[in-house]
Image: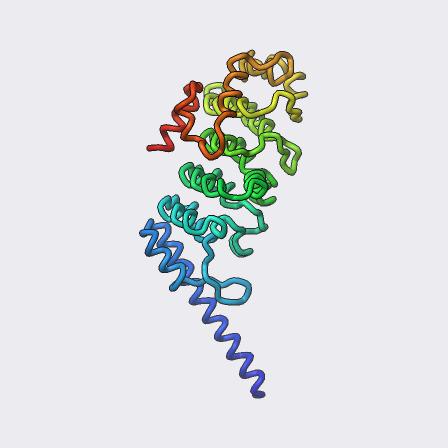
Length: 294
């Protein structure tokens, strides 16, 4: 057998062995995060002991990839460590093996999808120090076309009806006016969810809608508006007369809504949500603040 063939066979064998070892190592790290082992131990594993197979070679886990594991398993101390120690690289795009498309903000959408409220708040606090243009781009980035369907994290919060995630994103500057890949605004997504819900299950969705009211501009154009006008009575029964009249453009928002908008917009992202308790805001915003502090 020619020496080149022997060398290639040996190289392939070494590659297969390395790939097998990486698979074991990767699973060990996954288990360690799942079992909520201490952050210092996980960091020792990540930087010195754990490897995975990436693009035909052995690679270490990046802070971004470690944060994805922390999000999946709700390992709050490890997520906070990564965000404090590596705010930029922890929120960077992971390698292709961790994401089917290279979204700029997979962690934000994943935090909403898994309803990881405390980790979401940690992410939002971490991006406060980013340049403003980078912070806005991160907040309003469309997610993976396969997983999120080209939606922003705010769209996902409306689709899954996550009122705490919704108000946190809005309070930190996420835009309620953007369209997803299907042309829907977050308001359209939430109205679609409301239309599919029996009346007895409406409370959380209407709570989310009330939160969205505080940030949506009065002149917002959204595709579902025509449907509201064409089906007045069913929508009025679902939303209540006041919500319906404003959304359909038949009357301006109430003085209460107008006043609450002005109040909540006095809170900068740097002060949100801690400053909520210092303002005379409606009760549906107060439980959020208490839940985050508990």
